Amino acid sequence: MDQRLEEHYAKLADIYNALWDGRPEYPDWMAERIRSRLKVQQGHRIADIGVGTGLFLRRLLPYATPDTPVLGIDPSAPLLELFPDDRRLHPVQATAEDVVAQRVRLPYASFDAILIKEAVHHFTDLDNTLTGLAHRLAPGGRFLIVALPPKIGYPLFQAALDRFAVEQPDPEKIAVALRNAGLETTIEYEEFPATIDREVWIDLVSDRWMSVLSNFSDAELARGIEEIRERYTAPQLELLDRFVFILGHRPAEAPHA
Ligand SMILES: C[S@@+](CC[C@H](N)C(=O)[O-])C[C@H]1O[C@@H](n2cnc3c(N)ncnc32)[C@H](O)[C@@H]1O
Image 1 (cartoon, rainbow, N blue to C red):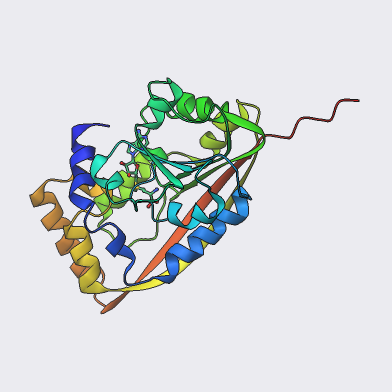
Image 2: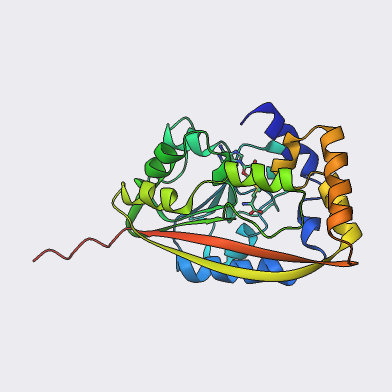
């Protein structure tokens, strides 16, 4: 992970979970979408890669046991430190690229479920990393990538929206990387509409809560915030969270005749 990104997440660690204070129903909504697609069961070997603070991982814990803990993998030490102390959780400080190159020791050689939520845009070699991870999926296993699509409906300034669109990977390209490892794939979109207080939103943008904002200088960000104030004048702003769910499934081996 490059230094700019590392500093971005280290700075954000304290406020990360608080970001959803204004809409507590969102983590449950998202966790249910993840659970229903991954079809996790007790005893499954699960990895959440780019896990962050474990906001969604916590909701997978009922399926984990001390013998088969959920792996929470992330390169950011300050984010991993926020994990609860729980024997069903196994934190690993590493990037997805480290996992593929086997630079880290993991307790499982293969997985029944792999989740990557809002982290693929950080991968340096997207295709090979996703294909490499998909190769670690056991027969019958599922690999879910949740991401924001390149075009987002956030009330941001135009330069940030444009830069986000360039940096965010194309969902079809992600699906191809999974298919190259023998997975069957589907792509679905779901929306979580919410409103946010305009001043709370402007504070979040000032705190650079999205990593794309860490690319802008202080002066550029100040100009961007002025643009937001001019474009969005209502006290409550619409925040349409539209997510793409790319699901890969490795067919179970056919029974021997
Ligand atoms: C936007 S956060 C998402 C966190 C969490 N999955 C969630 O949805 O709340 C992106 C995460 O990706 C992690 N990350 C950055 N580069 C990574 C890489 N190369 N491999 C794995 N994770 C990475 C960051 O440290 C950060 O925790």
